[in-house]
Length: 387
Image 1 (cartoon, helix red, strand yellow):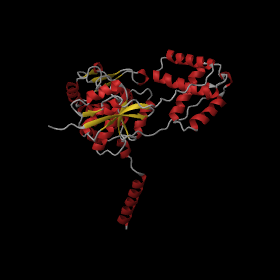
Image 2 (tube, helix red, strand yellow; image 1 turned 90 degrees about the horizontal axis):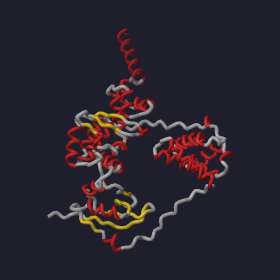
Image 3 (tube, rainbow, N blue to C red; image 1 turned 90 degrees about the vertical axis):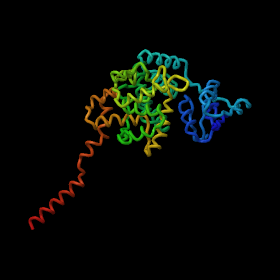
C-alpha cells in the first residue's frame, strides 16, 4: 500500500494577520490541490504555502487533503493563538464639514452608476487630497493641486496610471463641488506609458497548451487564448452564457459595463465538453473546490508553472494570451474594427497598439542596410560586365 505524503499545518503571523502555514515535501499533486483553494498563497519568505487562519479555511484544508495526504495539525490544536495585535486602522484627520462633503461625493458617484471599484478608488484619492490641506476647500486652487501631486505622487514614486486616476477623480469632484477655485480645463492628465504588449508566437501557444497536463488548467489556458478573454471575464463566466451549438460565448457586464459576443474555436469544443463531464461545475464554468468563482491568483500561478515546462523563458500572464490572440488575428488579416469589437475595447486607439507588434508586415519591410549592400553588389556586377 502506497504511503500518503504528510502535510503539516502550523500557526504563523505573516503579513499582519494570523495564517495557517502549510508545509510538505515537494509534491506536484498537493501543489495542484492548493492552487485550487481560494485564498491559499505561496510565500518565498516562508518557503511554504499559507492561508488565513479561520475555522472555515481549516475545514477546507482537511476536506481537500482527504485521501491525498496525512494531515498533522497538532500545532494548531495544542497552541493558543499568538498574541500579535492587528495594526490599528488609521483615522483620517478631517473636519466634520469635509467628512460630510466626502460622504456626499461618494453618493454622487453612486448616482452616476460608476463601478464599485472606481467609486472606492476615487473617494479614497479625493479624501487624501482633502486631508492633505484640511482647510476650507474654497481656498484651494490649481497651484495647490500641483503642489499636492509633487509632494505625494512624485516623491512617493506613484505610477503614472495612479496619477491619471487622481486627476480624473478631481475633475469629477470639481463638477460635484463647483465652489472650488480649480480650473477644470487646466487639469491635465500625464500621458500614458506606451509599452508594447508581450506576445507569444502561435508555436509557443501550442507548446504551452500541450505541456499543461491538468485538464482544468489546459481548458482555462485554451479559452483565454482562443477567445481573448480578460481574467475577470474568465472567472465570472457562467455556464448559461455559453452556447456550444452557436459556438458563442456571451460576455456580460465586462469592463465599462459592456456586453459582447465572442466565437468559440471548433477545436475547443471537445476539450470543454470533456472538462464539463469530468468536473461537473454548477454555476460558473470554472469553480473553486469550495464552489464559487475560481481564484485569479491560481490561474496566474499555474500559467507561470506550465511556461517553465514548455521552456518559455519569458513572463507570461493571462493578459499575455489576450495580447497574443489580438496580434494573431491582425496577422491573419482580420480588420482592426472587428478585433476591437471582439476584445471589447471602447476606443480604436487601444486596439491600434497591436499594429506595432504584428510580425507579418514588419518582416516584409527591407532593412536599409540590406538595401544599401544589395545596391552596391548590383553596381559592382554592372561595372564588371562593362569592363
